[in-house]
Length: 280
Ligand code: SAM
Image (tube, rainbow, N blue to C red; front, side, top):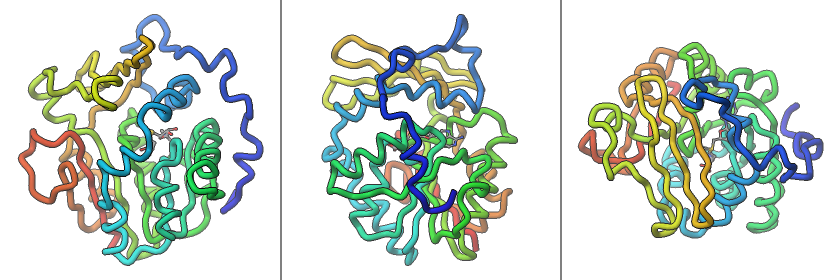
């Protein structure tokens, strides 16, 4: 499937079926360390609540024009958003007139993104259902930029999957393309243990995200909402230099890392890191 909207047309329209209301991590949640589990974690209840509470306007304000400026500075015209989620960045890029294709491995996310595109500005997103590890099977164009944002790459649990996904992103780029990939700053969590600093509050104190378990192979976060409901995500804690090394090893020539959108930073300080990897 290439530059088509058929994934959304075929996606389930009843987004809140009973199966979608509870996450299932089994008897031992900290044993769930699989790259394939993400489609079960982003259930509709969680996604809808998140989108309802973390309103897009606030997100726009906190992020500013960082990504748009970065893309323009690299003369980017076409973008493949490989972790579309509910469509926040895709919609932003369409509004800024980038030729944008929105991919994700979760049909539910794509359906939600498609709806959000219509809601926020009447945009018809061009969506593709694709898992990163087999991206080039479903995406046949080449892009000036691939973006993988919102701490998404952390969903891959084996190095083999991470290398495969990065190789697929690399192949989807034109010869001078760039990959922009962000992640939480896991180093300080791994090195210094839990601290209050690692509870992240959104919408004032209404929504919180805090690590419930962390070891070298798992960061399990709990997301708590004002109505008392809780959801979890199991993620792989990527160390900054490990991600940078992988990017170089799959062939990217130059990797620049920003901390909380700044070029210079003290390693422990930022909550988020953004890697910009140049193909040539
Ligand atoms: N970028 C969006 C944002 O910032 O709001 C969404 C981020 S959400 C944390 C992560 C997204 O990555 C989910 O939509 C999930 O379905 C997708 N994802 C995780 N692993 C994937 C994989 N192996 N292939 C394709 N998509 C994947």
